[in-house]
Image (cartoon, rainbow, N blue to C red; front, side, top):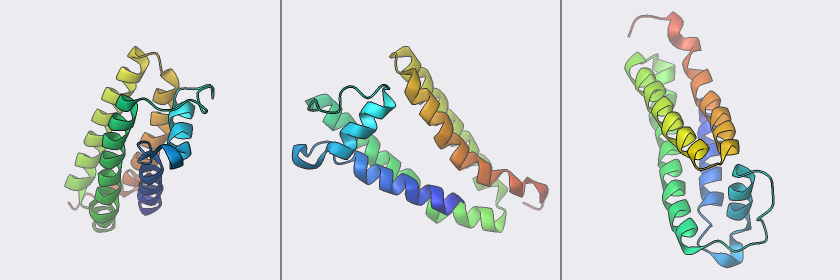
Length: 134
């Protein structure tokens, strides 16, 4: 399940990363608009800062997907609790910062979507808690 999540995050990061390219950024505009529900800005062009910040965020999400697939998936297979715990901590820190900031910015719908993403990452980490070897 974690590898599937990593792949979904990678695809999402590529689509989100199209933001700076006006002729092909419809997927980015859709992701941004659905994150700030309701869908009401899809036809509007993205401003300079949105393109820039979205590129940064997409790059970070791509890196997270690589870490999940290349480090966390093997850690789950090996029941490496240190990496699993660090992943849980990192994702909870991301969730708090991103969600609180989203709510403070008036975009509560993004915090709701963040909850879905958090669950996708955390669920595969908890079934392995039964083995206390590591």
